[in-house]
Image (cartoon, rainbow, N blue to C red; front, top):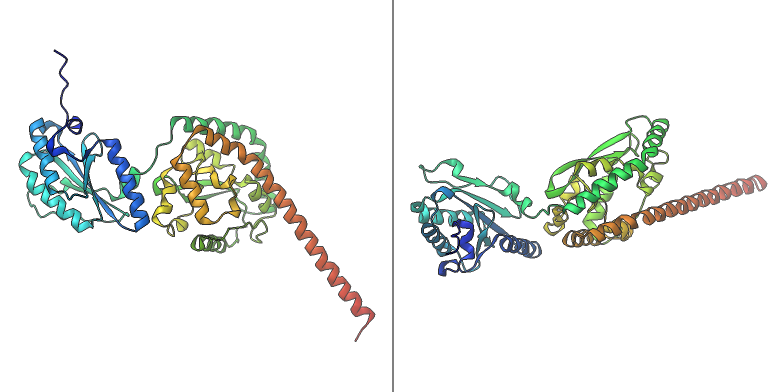
Length: 391
């Protein structure tokens, strides 16, 4: 006789049973949730997820199958059940409101109370709604029995960076810090000489899963610089969605040489420390401002599913010549097809792109100088003409 395998609830969905039709294993269930999320983003609909945590100490094969059968009886034909984790069953309720999900929870609770298998029940909704209040009308039930997972729903869609990506981040960022060490000496001294104020600036940005992170940059704007005006230009770019952002290396609020630092990306070098810390990766979507994120549609927020990067697909694919929608699509496509060779290719392409920005900066500077000289010559010619022919 073969060795008997100890039964656990996780095995239940691997066993053919008449009451388990439509039940999904963890990977399939999570994939279904991701598909439902894409459908909700495109159709502007919503869905709810109910999580039921099982008490392992009270489980037997017979009671668990009866418990599953009871759940399926309360499900609609469009609903799905599957494993969310080793101890939690998830029920996906498409096109369902909070009140509808709570009614489902109440029906399941009333129908399965005799089984004594449930440790807790949780509820999440997509798109996320904060402050979901669970309706509990059973005085004998502990309040901790019910919970909400709306704040954690984004975690279900986040992709943990592959091991190779973390190794690549650490290796290249350490190498980059060593190579750029002279810049960490020169740039701070330059900033001190041309502008009063701090050398570095800390900015709040949106990172993995929508969490707020702080990134480090060399300061390129004067202390009295109008950051609000620059942010408004950026927000207008997002609202429009179909117009390239363009470049402005000559913002009067920048410190002398600040445009050059931005054109070459030298102000972003300190973010190599963010990469080492794990808040950022070398390659990924650029972390946006919180005000930007508030303007994002739900499908735009898929760019928060992966760790933000120092460089990325849109930086080497056109950057300032791309529209906001094109930028978002490039970031999402990158996140859906992670690969070592793609990351390496983007890193290698970043160098010639930076050289191209330098050439563009020099060209614009020469053009501005020529325009200024033309205006000066025109002014001098007018003055000379007025002196020859006085009124």
